[in-house]
Image (tube, rainbow, N blue to C red; front, side, top):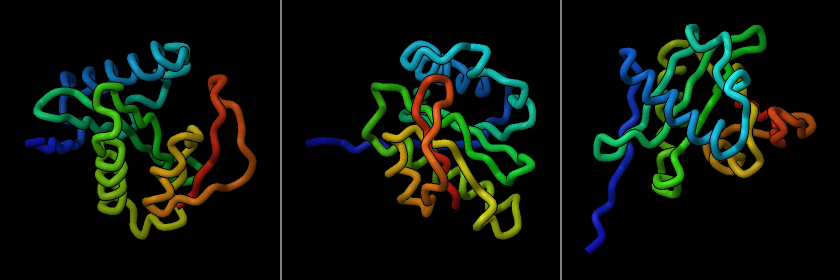
Amino acid sequence: MMISKSAVVKLVEDNEELQRTYKIREVVFVEEQKVSREEEFDEFESVCKHFLATIDGESAGAARWRETEKGVKLERFAVLKEFRGLGVGSALVAAVMDDISKTIDNPKGKCYLHAQLEAMPLYAKFGFKPQGDQFLECDIVHQTMLY
């Protein structure tokens, strides 16, 4: 009998949880995808709302969002390899969108993200649509998607 585990996503509330999100991003972006630490950890860390996904208390994924001059930007969605395919990404997007809807009046048309191509179907499930041309960000092909 297979017992299904589901992700729990919470808004980061303290430094210990924040460090857990940083570790996930370090593994996924810096180690796996070879993004430089300087590009990954930027000047916006302190103004973002960060989210931590866990499964059975273990760190599984991370994400953040912030307001920019262009609207609300969803960023840094990362799921550790051993937790991929378990719905962690969907749980993160759902939690972030829920938080945005509680913070931003009528977020439809105000949210955007830069999706790696393989993640586009995930964001499309939540109503994000491709906009413009694909582009390179940190030597990885991305597509802007609008909500």
